[in-house]
Image (cartoon, rainbow, N blue to C red; front, side):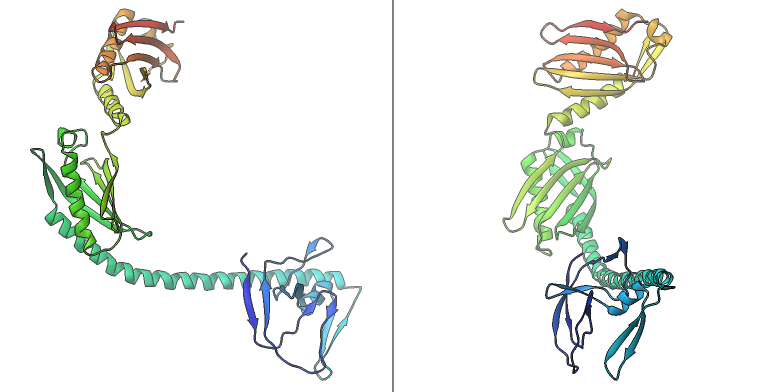
Length: 366
C-alpha cells in the first residue's frame, strides 16, 4: 500500500502501545503522519482497529480505545481531570474481547466498503467526463472517415485499381491515430502482388498528411483485404514527416509458405487409391536452409483398411505430384512426413531436387 501524507489540523489524542502521552493544558499542532497497512497481533492473533494505526516520529501510534476494547477493559473518560480510566474484569475479559474483535472487524469491512464506494464514484465521474470528450472526438473522427472514403476510395497502381470502400479511424490511448482501411481485393491476387511499392507508399503518405492537418499525432495505418486479412502496416512519424513500412504481406518467405499451404490444401485434399478416398485436411510447411519439410495430416487411422490395402506405387505418385508443386516455387530438396488422424507416423519420403526423384524411406505396417 502506498503511504499517505496526512496533516492533522486538530488536537491528536493518540497513544503508543503501553505508553500514554498527555499534557496539562490542551493545545493543537500540525504533524506529519504515515499511514501503512499496519497489523498488530496479540498472542499471535490479529487485533481489530476502528481507527487506523499510523507512524509518527518513528513510533507506531494506535487508539487507546481500540487497545482497551481488544484487551477487554472498561473505559471511562473523566473530562474534568482529563483522565481516562481503564478497568479490568478477569471473568468476562476474553468473551468481551472476542465480541469486540468481531465488531471491530465488521467496522473495518464497513470502512473498506465506504472507501470502495467513494472510489467507484470517482471512476464514474471520470467516465462521464470521458464520454463527453469522446463523444466530441468520435464525431470528429467520423467526419474524417467520411472524407477519406470520399477522397481516397481508390488507388490506380501499375495498371490496376485498388479500391478502398471503408475507413475506420480511432484515437489510441497513447495519442496515436490508427487508420484501418479495407480493400476489395485479395492479398494473394495480382492486384496486390504486382503493385508498385513506392507508388502505393506515396498513396498512404498522402492519407497520413491529410490526417495530420487535423491531428498532430503519430499515425498507424493498417491495410486489410476483402477477407479482412492483414495486408500491410505502416507508421507515420509526424515530427520527422516520415512513413515507415512495418509489415507487408508477400514480402517474406513465411507468407509465401502460407500461400503454398493453402494451395496444397485446395488441390491435394484427397487421393483416390484402390477404390477408396484418402482425405488430407492440413499441410504444414517449414523452410530450412537446404530443404523444405512438409507435414501432411490425414483424417483416417493408420490401422484402417484404407491404409493397409492401398496401392503403394499409386500413393507415392500422389506424394511426388505434391513435391512437384512445391518444386515450382522452391529449388530445394523436400522431405515429406505423412501422419494419421492421431498424429502417428504413416510414411516418410524424400525428394531430390537435383534428380527430381522421390524415395519412400518409411511405411507403417501392421
